[in-house]
Length: 210
Ligand code: AP5
Image 1 (tube, protein in one colour):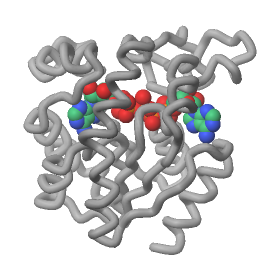
Image 2 (cartoon, rainbow, N blue to C red):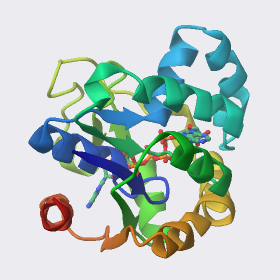
Image 3 (tube, rainbow, N blue to C red):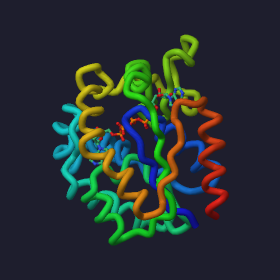
């Protein structure tokens, strides 16, 4: 059983890699970003609380996200392990997580800001299954390869919001690299390699820990 955290700035490839690794290991991908977007689409109370923060590129308050993750990890499909994609994002979230989950590894995808800006501005996502794509690799294709849904650009991938998200990452989330280093759980991987090279590097780290 492996309980894994994926760290890294916006656009580092957490969602892309989490999908590949989860499929390989047969464990669920738990993306707080996807859960919050789905709460907004369903107009739930959590979604209404989260929307203003997300649209501005700010973090949703800790107590909202912690409650969401705690409830999700109690589901039976998490018993065999999971990947947390985008949680924790503050030291407070990481401390809360320690109180209700035993994390085996934290994988940090390390990518420079200028590369992230290019990736996010060209990103298109499937609004149904969340699969991420990049316009440079779509060859004009406009629909999701998994379910055929028309791809969209996320509201928070607009240039001004991307700058805010990066600033918030450096201030609030980057300190988690020290947090998980001190816990002896951190594995940093250069996220600037190809998709396949990164997947292989992550799987190698996880195999060595199994
Ligand atoms: P969330 O949805 O988690 O967004 P994020 O962390 O900003 O991460 P992204 O989804 O933008 O990027 P990613 O690392 O998954 O990259 P991807 O694989 O898509 O969160 C959105 C918002 O929700 C937050 O701003 C916040 O408001 C709120 N929120 C969520 N969690 C929260 C929490 N815990 N606490 C508080 N608030 C929270 O890849 C990006 C692009 O690059 C794609 O086009 C992809 O095809 C391409 N790409 C990926 N890898 C490579 C590669 N190796 N080479 C070339 N291109 C690549």
